[in-house]
Every structure is written in structure tokens, then in C-alpha cells.
Amino acid sequence: MGRIMAIDYGRKRSGVAVTDILQISANGLPTQRTCDLMEFIKGYCSREQVDLIIVGEPRDLKGNPSESMRYIIPFLNRLRKEMPDMRVEMYDERFTSTIAHREMIAGGFRKKQRAEKGRADEMAAVIILTSYLECKKR
Image (cartoon, rainbow, N blue to C red):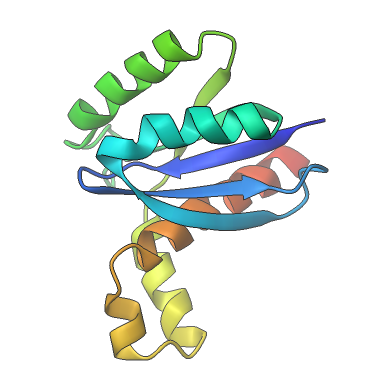
């Protein structure tokens, strides 16, 4: 059994999270500059067994794909082209950034810590992956 990776794709930075090898818990990895994301994924997958990559699917309140899908689709196409044997799925990421900020406040993060670039992106990826794992259990 391999890990599951989740990506909270952003135009400048992308949050990344992975499960343990038993696919029980999600842990954040360092936030990546989006321009370096593909190389990071390929490098990580060459060192660790990854069975599935989950990419956050942004939707509006009505459940329709959001405007940012126009940036994510080219990334998905490139990912599938460069890693044709990797299983890739999208998973609803509505409100993950809002939840990440609330979790940081609840966790006692100071305002300066919450403002650090990438911290919310990493947490959003962990939330996406945790939500996916919980849904998979049901």
C-alpha cells in the first residue's frame, strides 16, 4: 500500500499533503511554488510509493466549478501526461482555505504566523486529504 498525496493548487503557491503508508492520517509537506510543483511531485513519487494524487476541485456555493478551474485543468493535463501511470482524482475543496484559517486561530497561531505565506496552503491540503480519507471510510 502506498501513500495518497493531496494538492491544494494555487496560481503562485500550492499546498501539499500526504498520508502515512497505511493511509490513516494526513501530514503537510512544505508548500511549493507552483512553478516547481511538477518537479516536486515527480521527485517525491520517485522516493516514496504514491498510489493516488488528489487535486482540490474548487467549486462555488452552488456546486459549479469555480473560475480557478481554468488554471487547474492545464496542470491536471500536464500531470496526467508526465505521470501516465499515476491515478489522479479531483476532490471538492470548498471552504478549505477558510477552515484552514479558523484552525490556525483555534490552534493558537499568532497573527504573524497565520500571515506566513504557505502555511494556510499546507493546512488546506491537509484538510482536503483528511476529508477524502473520512469520506473513503464511509
